[in-house]
Image (cartoon, rainbow, N blue to C red):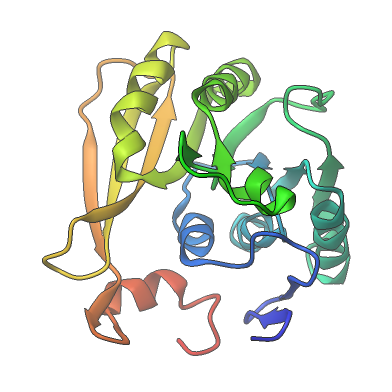
Length: 235
């Protein structure tokens, strides 16, 4: 696979990024929702693909990407500058805990590192991109609670086993689970990922949706293709 991934509206160079474009990222970029978001943040932007997808979808929004890996941040900046949305895209090479936040946000998204208490990758850059601990998620939730606008949303794509932990920790920060997208590979498969949507709204009924990726081996479902039809050349 080459380093350039061509989308319908932009291209993404992945050459210097420890985490390449993957299904999790593009699903979050295509699915994340907000009513008239003007300020959007992608935490751990990597190549910048999620930020680019959101800039395409939310035409009035200013979109920030924060990335701790220097080479990845430089690559994301280059990808931003080559895109039709370059005037609305911003990169910060830092972590969220040391960032001087320029605005509060209507939408914060993240495809975070999620291997907790597991065997760490010997490649230091891939370890940073893929592995984390509970303290990181607690910090991320506290950051979101402080930096979201009153009606803002935090949306994360995570493995199924993190759902309960994140729901409990989010409530400690005054953020409540509003919506869940259950993602399965096949109709009879276990859930492999959730997209969890949190806000400050308390007491509302939880909304749940399902997305199946494959109808058969190497055959995508109509729902998956519909979700990504504005991005993938093949759809």
